[in-house]
Image 1 (cartoon, one colour):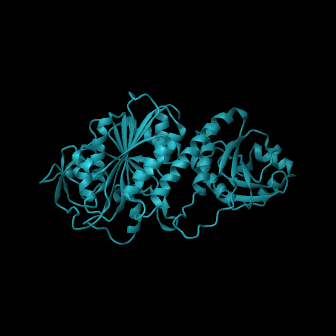
Image 2: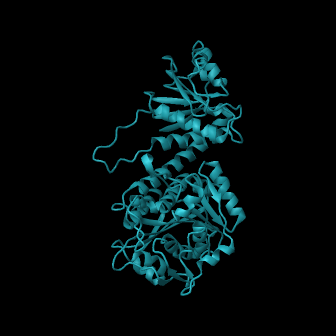
Image 3: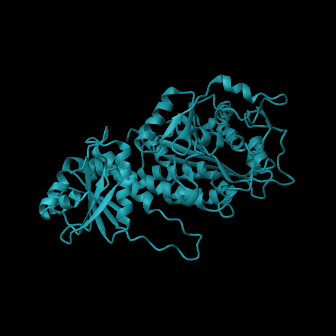
Length: 493
């Protein structure tokens, strides 16, 4: 779908479909202008009470003139619309639009007053919703699903003064959506296709397409670096592990880079501590942290901010075999700290801890790791917020704000030293699990032991990286949050 701005008066617009907001039961300026042009057809439709008042209600009105049809969209019963109501209304409108035969559309939803948000934000929210709804993954099917009928172009009606900032925001939205599509594609691929080698090849293809420097460290190089924790996870699999490093340089080399570290377990059986069979197929999504890093690198490379960014992905499988790590084994991490592996299904923190030690060499301005790390985080926060852990109040506040801005929210969780007690081991410097209580917190505390030399945050995306049930599939989160964070650090957001 192509996005653009339209500054012509609503009543002078030609379009396959005009999307018109209804706020507190009434039409705004754009809707009223169109209504006057079509002899009151819109107000007549509203008078029949066929449009639900709740945000997200839609009603299609056929006109047959210069504007072929109007889609009335309820944004709720309050005169000032909440961000949630606006987003729900936009998504409902775009789903309804996809079911029409309109070849193009213009949205006037932006004329609604949204609490604390400007015209550019409203356009970006709609563009991201449109791309999310348009996404399809059918490459593994012998017969692809029929293409939806939705329009190929969507314009955002606006005042001339808002056209330039809206154009910038929809360009950013398109880049973020491209990054989300990449992350979703990688996450949705089955484990027999998306292996560590496949992730490495995807990174190389991304580097070639966007002039990014890509390095892939092999097992021997990891052995020379003494990455005993990462290699311990990989040793039960026939698939060779990879440490993928992607560099985007948009600023002088002397500028300290931001670093994103993504968990890349391409399939997680749990190892010797094997998972139950039910829903184990969803463990192909255990590399969504890695996918979000590559998706963010794609978005940033397209937008070209003046900043340096490095993506680091430790990638391997966690499999049971005669060579697999056993519960009770002790391994030495790259940092020199030793770990007693009490549960081989707590493997994500093991590959991350060596990657987090590796990134010290970059002298980073800040490091964020992203991982589908714990079921405990899903229990704590459900599927709405990613879990956010950080010792830095300023970094945590920055990420929270970025998440709210792009509807890719996170929730700050505790990281108090008292939780470190649960990781004590009689046989090593620490255990890799701390018991059932506070499992997401103790997992973050484990990672914190390897990040003392730089500013760091951890995002547990176990509840947000994919959807289960009939809508099963990768969500592309937290690419919007991460991209917004990078752009903010570059002074572009």
